[in-house]
Length: 195
Image 1 (cartoon, rainbow, N blue to C red):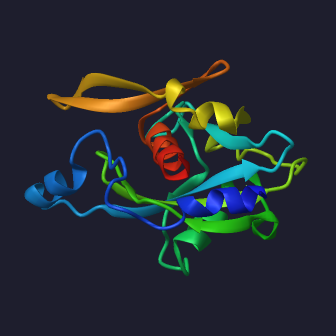
Image 2 (tube, rainbow, N blue to C red; image 1 turned 180 degrees about the vertical axis):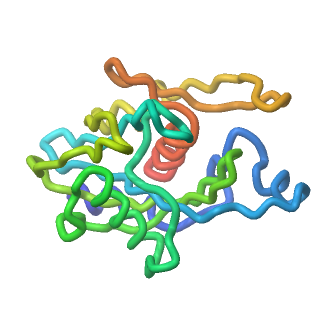
């Protein structure tokens, strides 16, 4: 089975996805909040043992400084689709040429407490691309073993307080990296879809 064939079951959306550290949709509706549409690229590098491309956000960023993230961001009015937005953002953030991405499709939306509705776009990229982090946004880019981060044994559910409420969130340790929050939750969703 090819990597693309293995990833196809993750395409589409379903109601049973892990949708956040709390019921974001119901809270947003109750508070009259409108979520901002965003998209990220879940870029899987087609190695003998596939890896997942991640970034560490610049420590000077106004939001989510220093966190591990997928390349991505807001969907702009000029973007034809969430996929177009994810590819544009990946090109801007890490110089990933859009034509080098074999897009498999989109998967479960993820809504954040910070006001975003994120469409994850799954894509396969070849190894050895000359990727370069955009210094203003990305402090570093790195790869983690795909099987390791997809293994439910490595998904730790933690509880903490944020804005006066108890919140649940996932943490995934991979080498010296700690992946948490929305990025970890989207990996958990992908893992559940592929199980």
